[in-house]
Length: 564
Ligand code: PEP
Ligand code: MG
Image 1 (cartoon, protein in one colour):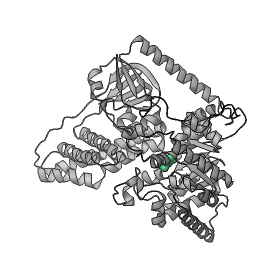
Image 2 (tube, protein in one colour):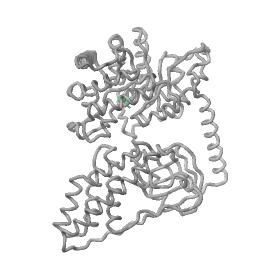
Image 3 (cartoon, protein in one colour):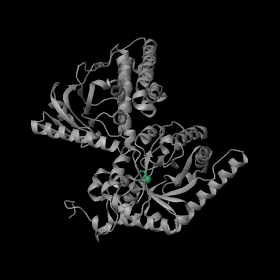
Image 4 (cartoon, rainbow, N blue to C red):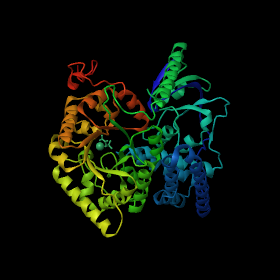
């Protein structure tokens, strides 16, 4: 029995036989061509064929993974049509008189190297997409037929060095128990697709795993722990089976909580909302019975576009979200671009410390034309439901003053144009900088609500870059400083008659739920799949005084922490 550690992509357990994926890889050799025009023509018809394949893949993916998941094949179409990519291939064929397969392979290597060298992990993950489209072109050029999908008549655990997004979607879901890859990043589209296809998956287990594994071997894939146990002994199988049935029972138990209140044993009620990144998450929000949307990260609209999304494009998305939520509260955060969320067409200058740089509201206030377009779309959509608008990365009163002035101006403009807007739109701010928490007494009278972004609040309070995994031992998410700042913001919100929620990841930390309830937090917003778990925890809490412990006493560093 051997255990391999990787990154869990979708948390569920699978036990079964392994099928190692063998690709029908075309071997690319360099050949000299005399008729370069004919070779370029061959490349162009391979492109046409590849574009048709991508259309088919898009259609296949749509019902399985939704529009956002299937969009990867649109991105692949764009990549195949990319001018730089095409000029590189055609230029090589012409200048070096080489065959199209070789020119594509060389271009692919260059583009992959370029993406891999980028600082941004999202862009690094795009190297896999370049390889995917290039392999598709090479296969088409050499008349190949792609990969050998296992044809076993039982479900199997697919193992591969890496899986391209198109391969992931091509796999017959009814035949796949789980998948494990030696390489790949959690940000890759393959990982994103696995999550939306609900397939247990562990990625990046390393080359040693592939050398050790054979077709037919038994393995346990634990997508939650990011662990693969190869040739498990009887005891490990029994444990995994037990865990799997516990998971099923827990899921059944949670399903029964649909429609129930988020109420503690002593009768305290709290709102449990969901965080979303786009319209495709609405299904999960409704399925899990969230009371509303506490954070719509609108920047995903910008991240998914090739250019600034127009007012109408944005309006249509916001309207659909509001309509789908049928009168339940929807809090849309204005764009939070910058830091780890870079968008090329914004043309932002490279910064030494992007997390401390021009991001979020700072971009909106320095480029009001972008901000105003989003606000117009938001206000136009406001008549279709109960909208709240939230502003990220606030540090001062003057920022709020500027924001409110721009908002008033946009509202007046729309009224002059006879465009109906709601007068009930709540205006809130994220408390995600220590500054905003410390002066929350001054900010509270200026807005309708606060929502605490614990991801950034923790990063800025503890001076721990949230992107850097090496800092995990230094980043105590229960740090007293962070909890005190949240409590301070809660007290100041309530003193001014305003409500306060938490939409950062800490909202889903069940060991803190009681602490947050005792602070008087009014709303917790978590990923849709966490709503019912949180409801279950809330319903088990009793806030009647039963001990003299304060939240700070309860949350000192756990034993075993590296610094005690
Ligand atoms: C946060 O910082 O906690 C937050 C919710 O915003 P984001 O994770 O999008 O920065
Ligand atoms: Mg944030």
